[in-house]
Amino acid sequence: MPHIRIRNLNVSYDGHPALNDVTVDIPDCQITAIIGPSGCGKTTLLRCCNRLIDLTPGARVSGEVLIDEANIFDGAVDVMQLRKKVGHLAQRPCPLPMSIYDNVAYGPRIHGTKDRKTLDRLVERCLKATSLWEEVKDRLRAPASKLSIGQQQRLCLARTLAVEPEVLLCDEPTSALDPLSAKQVETRLTELKSTYTIVVVTHILRQARRLADYVVFLYLGELIEHGPAAQVLTTPQHERTRAYLAGEVS
Image (cartoon, rainbow, N blue to C red; front, side):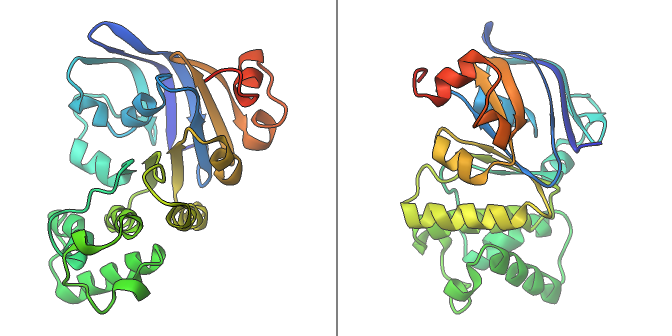
C-alpha cells in the first residue's frame, strides 16, 4: 500500500473551488511530478499532503489524504509529527537566520536529539546527501545566509532530510535557481528517490520528463490524467493532456 492515498479531495478558498474530487495514489520510492497550467491546483494539492494548507486563510478542505492509511485531516493528528514524516522543500530557499550547522541540526533538536556527537554525524550525513559537505565543511559556523542561492536550496533539502522523513514534497524547487544549481538539485532528488517518496510540483515539462517516474496532470482543479511518466508524457489518453503537452494550453 503506498504511503500517500488521496480520496475525493476538495479544496476551496473563500468559497472558490481550487480542487474538485481528486482521487489518486502516489507511488512509493518514485518521483511523482504534478503538472498543469498556472492556477490549476498543483501547489494546493501538494500543501494538502502535510497540512500546510491549514496556514492559508479561507481554505476549506473535504475528503481524505491518507498517510499510511490514517487520514491526516483527522482532528487527532499531531501536525508536528506529520510534518516530520512528510517534509517540504519550498520554491525559494528559506534558510533559518543561524549557522549552516544549526540549520541542519534545528529539526533534530526540536524532536529531542541533544547529543553533540549524534548531531555532528547527522549534519555531516545530510550535507553529504545533498553534495554540500565538501563545499561547507570548513565553515559550518558561518551564517547560512552567506551561501549562494543554489547552496541555500541544497541546505534546505539537508535540513528537511535531518528529521528523517518518509516523503519529500517539493514545490517548484528549482524555479529560483540558475541552470547549474537546478541540475544539482535534480540530481540529488534522483539519488534520493530510492529511499524517499518524492512529489514535485513543476511548471517545466522538460523537468518532468527528466525527473518523473509518475505524472499527475491537473487542469482547473480537476485531475485529468495520471499514470507512469513514460505513458502520460508520450501517449496521453486524454485530449486535454495532449493539448497541454503540445503547448496549446498554458
